[in-house]
Image (tube, rainbow, N blue to C red):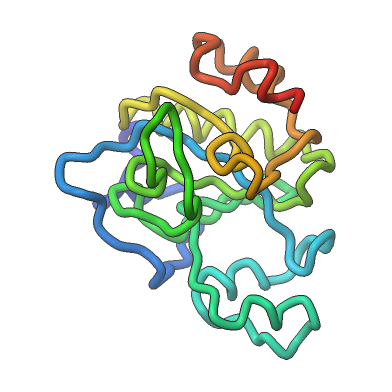
Length: 195
């Protein structure tokens, strides 16, 4: 993944594209400044399969599993999904707004969807993620920071406090910060990570 690996609209040539209809324009003059890390597995705790792709493209059969029934009217997306083995999928171009954060706030700014890139790691909140996911995530974050003025990398739990818990205690923030070598203020503070 290099700067030249970008396609029009903020699509990475190296990702597998699964275009989601759940997207829209960013507000005029608003740039991507935040990388927002999530976790997802469908049904919860189950990996593999195409349920995440189907959810983000509004093709999930809600009768295929009891858990899916609560997702019947849901229209969500993320820019990227990182599968357990490290495969990178992209659903929304980074120049557009994906629907991943919901009610959220970062450094006093509401509506994180407006200025963030949503990155979903396949996995269950609170549990461990795979080394391949971390390696691809670090490369992806470097590529994003080369194109956009990224000023922070946080979890959904940090921008939707009390409402969301992902990626959770199993996510290794210390490894990511060390691997990237970015200033400490780019990451959740230790007190927030321990909460």
